[in-house]
Amino acid sequence: MLLAADVGNTQTVLGLYEGAELRDHWRLATEAHRTGDELAALFGRFFEPAALDGICLSATVPRLIREYELLAARWMRAPLLVVGPGTRTGMPIRYDDPREVGPDRIVNAVAAKERHGAPAIVVDFGTSTNFDVVSAEGEYVGGVLAPGIEISMDALFARAARLIGVDFAAPPSVIGKTTAMGLQSGLVYGFAGQVDGIVERVREELGAEAPAVATGGLAELIAPHSRTIARVDPFLTLEGLRIVWERNTA
Image (cartoon, rainbow, N blue to C red; front, side, top):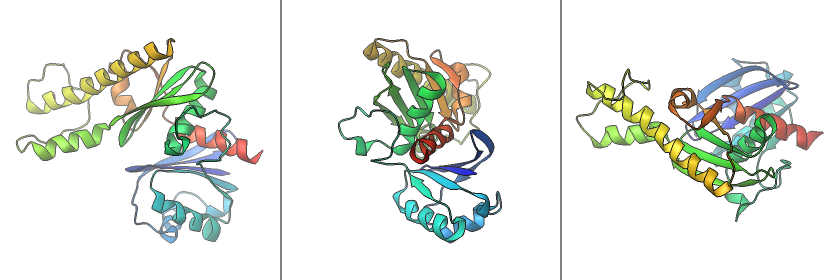
């Protein structure tokens, strides 16, 4: 079996694959201080490490890459593929410096092309909201980075003493009748409007009505209120890791 691991700045998403089938998945808080031994103890609660045939890793926290290398060598005794410069993805990267592109963005683009066709726009709701663009020719041509939903709301609460934290949920109406409803409206409709504005401008530059595919932890919250998001694919990044693994081990 393959362990696909997407280590983001805030959360880590794990997927356990048997062939092309996602057998199980988990979402954990990313803790940059964890050691490989601690990761082994944690992951051992979810699956049997000895059952793994390999690990495909996308990590935006550089310190943890070394710990995953230790995890793979000492505890799982399985080959580890760290997605980065030089990894075979099957997708040309049309970026001024390809080394600047996060591995999660590349695997998202790879999966979007394979699962939804090209052109495509991936909207990934993570620590930042990433827009990644695949051309009609199936090339990664760049994207847009915007502040993420959670960090934007945390910054607002930290700077405005009278505002309170709210559940991330859609309010019953756009016009809020309470402070909490007003904050929820700004969150949901504000970010939905941001997505629509950016996607429409990207489509203008592409000269194509590229479908927008949403993924990430809060995609299900925003997508129903967006005009441009065509579908939600919650496991897009994990699928991209699986595809890249196969292209490097076949």
